[in-house]
Image 1 (cartoon, rainbow, N blue to C red):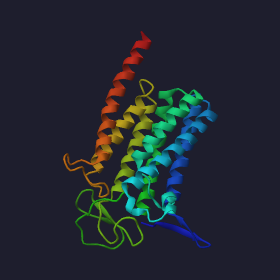
Image 2: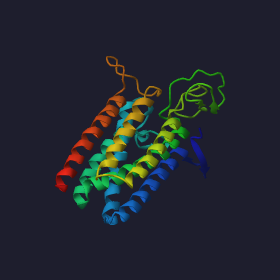
Image 3: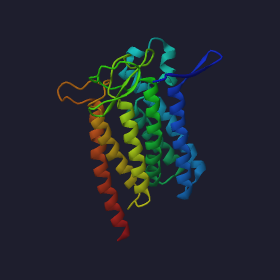
Image 4: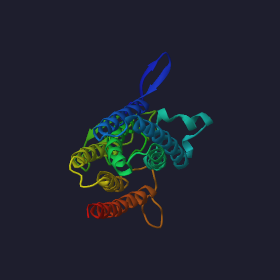
Amino acid sequence: MFPVLFEFFGIKIYTYGVLVALGVFVGYFLLLRLGKKEGLNTTHLENALLITLFFGIVFARITYILEHPEQVGKILDVFAIWQGGLTFFGGLIGGLLGALFSIHRYKLPLWKTADLSAIAIAIAHSIGRLGCTSAGCCYGKPFLAENISPGIHLSSKFPFFYVVFPEGAVAPPYMPLYPTQLMEFFGLLLIFFILLFFYRRKPFDGAVFSLYLLLYGALRFFLEFYRGVTPPIEPIGLTWNQIVSLLMVLSSFALMFVLRHEGKVKKT
């Protein structure tokens, strides 16, 4: 809703960049705190996180540009991530590649690290969605309403509120839209608390990460029906994000089965 947070000597400080950075820092410190409690080498964990972040941001930006080439007018626009423009699934793929490399490089326990990372990702991603709300990226489909003044407005129809963006946002201005960014923020915040609760009672390493794949995959699949950014693939009527979401859900069940079985074998 407020793309520019403030100006400092003519330099614009974008709200999106501030909130994404805040999300990263919160996830970063939470991961290190949980890692210390688990007895992991925090220096190795910190190095692994930095490598993972680098891969994640690069892939998130590349996939966003491939998905929205119309938003790149000049070469510098490719690097202007502070204005908005990262895709989560691109970041997830890049982050997984970076994580696998760094976990192997620093000899960290794979599934224990994955569990901690899932919790950190959930809270970082939720805060990042507030950044999307400020920039207007990842916006929703048109919402049937009459009030077109910029802001958040209540409604009697699901999801019981909608947003209207001002001029200068990525989203179409002065048009009532489904608040998909805020819907995902609340969903991710709920997922974060569920994962944190489950983490203290997890039956085996990898269970928290598996649950994250299930919950976020289901949330994103549902929200895609209300997002106005990615068009559906004609033959099947689903977006590519929904296909990835379904793969996340199926992977979660497969991973739970395999890891639970391995845990039982180790005990016998």
